[in-house]
Image (cartoon, rainbow, N blue to C red; front, top):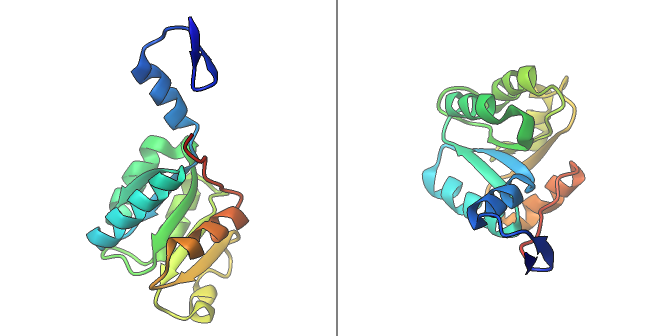
Length: 150
C-alpha cells in the first residue's frame, strides 16, 4: 500500500483506479453531424477534463443517453442535424432527463432560435463558427466545470 499522485493507493488494479477517476469527470453528450468538428471538439473537451459521449445524429444521441442517462450533465447539440432539429432533440432528451442543460450551436441568429426553445429552460446558444474558449464559459454558466488533469 502506498500513495499514488497524492492519493492513498491500496494496490488495486491501475485500470480500476482509472475507471473510477473517469466516472468522476463531468459527462457531456456532444451531438454534431460533421465528423471533423465532432472529433476536434471531443478531443478539446477531453483535454480540458470532460468525459465526452459523442453522436453524429439525434438517433445516436438518444441511444447513448439511454445507456448513460444518470451521468450526463449537459448536452451540446448542433441545431441542424440530419434526422431532426435541435429543439426536437432537446424535447426528447428531456423526457429522459427533464433538467438537462443544453447548449445549442448554430449559424442561425440566436433570437430566431430562442423562439423555438421558448418553453425550455437552461438552454444557451452559441453561434457557429465558435472556439472552445467561447464554449467553456457557457458550460460554467450551466454549472458544468471541467476536472483539470493532474
